Length: 217
Length: 232
Image 1: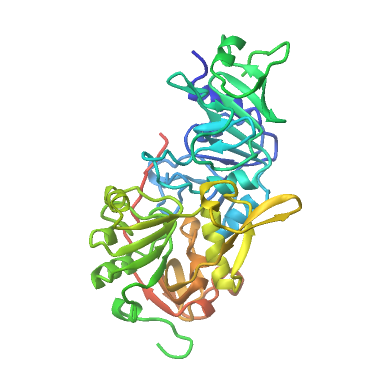
Image 2: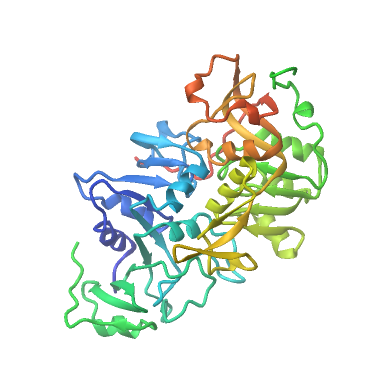
């Protein structure tokens, strides 16, 4: 069973704080924008040169000069700013973004992440992902815990890496885990999912506390 | 065109001196902020053997994608490419070399090229395939890799407005790679929506000072949208 994509996004939204500047990657991470707690002021940074990304425009407000990192047409909120790609990545690489959310194929117990290339199948490029994981202190990865019965929470990533020793928090369809001291630490489990089920689908070293609460939304 | 006046009337003049095997930087993020007419001119000129530096490679039949139809690109340097079938085909067959570069590193390599910084260190990509063969230096206990600047024979940029001296203003997210590329080309050609007289652009709000720009041409733009996304 486990969480849906929307529910993963909903759980990750709980990592937001009032006044945060946040970068959301393509895929599940973009859904996090729909769950920003009411009353909280958050600015979304888009790597292509926009601070203050808003929702999708209505049909009459579509502007070809205003897109997000996924090349979708968007709007800009009141108080937004536009800047160049060099400026955008200075912001990212310089550690100014408070929270970065991105997807992954694999994460390992040393905090390494593989998210951009499947040898022989998908070699389109890494975009801004390598800069994002290198520059951010607070990264949350949204991903599937397993694929066709094979664990994606690993001892060592098998796929080409996006970054090394940089991931500290992962939210999957089954669990919330933190990574430190060479191991995954089980923090929360998805509603209705047992610790045993999580353990059986985790290849990497998993530290399980006496009590693992269910996620609340 | 004389003195500080950069304006040219024809695409022949805009691209004069552009030859086979040159390195060309092309502005834009996806199809946003691309110099459409200058790309079309490269296609018409049928120059070959190009090393093309651009964040993306266009789509089938539009943007840089059209240069693939005549196998004009020998080496593509970008951060996210392959949104078109022809690109994937030429890449996989070995007809075209592709150097995938992280977007931030790409932006900074171009900025550095225009700014007289031949190399810089970044943590981006350390420990990944792109770090292969690159020098590593440790700063404050953390490893960084040495990346070298990019330069180009021609930089083709798209701006919103230019004055006759080549001062440029960009619009919204169509800015992206254009300002840095403008500084890094030996010859920078700016294709713009509107040309105004010197003094009409507010000096406090110039994005790219005219010193970097050699030629200015007024263009017509389709401004195709890659993913028209709306809410009800």
